[in-house]
Image 1 (tube, protein in one colour):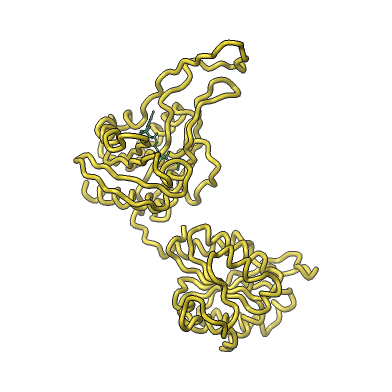
Image 2 (cartoon, helix red, strand yellow):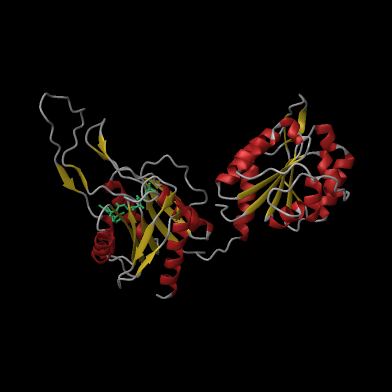
Length: 402
Ligand code: PMT
């Protein structure tokens, strides 16, 4: 995730501008604050309004325009950048910066910034291979400017060769890795097992019982833990989410029984277990291997108890750290507190499902951490990734004090 990171994106005039829209969209969605500067030629390809909408920030195009948020705008933008990305970078901007020319908003801001600057060139093959351009690139590299090299292929002008803007995935990965390398790896070497998402209890080949868990909470914790250097095993019920990158292991499960089997298998290898999955307490007593036919009278389905996985882990806890979640609609504190002792947890994260922005499917959560000694830590509404980081901060303290 890129939350709290300021990325300035300089957009220069080339057909690959449309791909820069995707880059801005993706890094914004990853949590970065994205500020776009467009050159006059870039505005011939795409309007500033497109980048304004995607970045949710004013787009700067003109050096002498009335500043919207800053006093000396190019200096302020230059200072705010944690990373300066120029995509696509034309031969013109490469040439200008390489030769100290600062004659418009973008070149002036690049000249004034102390942040790392990354060029993603895109141009016709003959232009890219031109000795002057190549010398400018060499010169910039010598000064510490970075490059995401263009790829080869069929160019918009019809030529085949080098000069195609690097893949959007490659550019986004570059940005993510850049910040990743800077992040503190305070959970380095710690093995964490995380459960996420819903379970599915089949009635027949067509129907099943499930719940409203989207997996967002567990996936957010997994991502944060990976970013902080932990070795993460994620066991997940069915979700529509992309599998987080750089996990040590990802295991897909369907039923509570599958989850129990997977968790008990992985338990030994992990020091910490965070149980955010919404596990069905009951399953149909009998599974019909043929579709149950409709009749005129009511249908009764008998349910039998599933194993309480957290409770089973609590019995064999040893020196592991066990964190549970409690999804409640009433008597939140009372109900959650009972679960800490019963399941032998280090703390429980209680979410009140009746609050807007808490619990199932939202990107945010409103939680209380409840500890075995009765202490309560109440957090305001925040992104699930932030909740994840608070959980990990507490786990770190527990491990350090063990
Ligand atoms: O996935 P999202 O849409 O982001 O939603 C997140 C969430 C609301 C699912 C999550 O924040 C949450 O609260 N997860 C736990 C939901 C739940 O099942 O709570 P519970 O009170 O029923 O269970 C308490 C604890 O025991 C949980 O850690 C649960 O994983 C565990 N449990 C429950 C039943 C069972 N048979 N076995 C278990 O291990």
